[in-house]
Length: 279
Image (tube, rainbow, N blue to C red):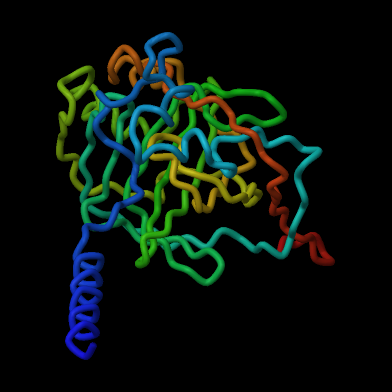
């Protein structure tokens, strides 16, 4: 009996070692665009993402998916959310054609954003056209996603939407390197040099906040979304470049809006102190 117990303990200890030595499945966006696309009849479009890979079932079965429609009737105004606390800094960056989008990556991070007691480091930004999120059912020409990660691998994304108008000054800085990798082979990458994320203009203190997911496979949930209320402007030429730079199946690279499923959507609006000063 004693030997039998020793054997059981040995096997249990061995199993624990195996489990702890197994690779951790990361939740980052899939970068190999050949695994999925945005075309309706290809069999690899958004309605099929959850069937294409056993690790992507959340795209089909998740109940807190992104993007969503920010319908005003569902929004609760919460002034105590507080201002968006950004501590960004210039950093070396590269621009990469992922096939399904153009991504700017800050090599060593570019500062951080502070949300609910957690610091999230700015890692990259990328663009979707048309916008993925909508406001009262209205879509816009472009949306940028600024992707942040915490030390424990949690994700926070800041989204800004754009309508056609004056050129966006931040994109103007990147036009040449984006042209250099336009419609090139998958993983085409170019060093940009120092890029200052503070040049991405917010334009307003108002923002929406909700819990959602990545908008591309594996559609991991638990993402803290912050969507700026102000819709900024971008030129037709800038949108055209981003659309033509990616591969043909992703010229329109927006995932359709997902069910809200009674999730709370909050809107931060600064309080007005006596004298007209904003909190």
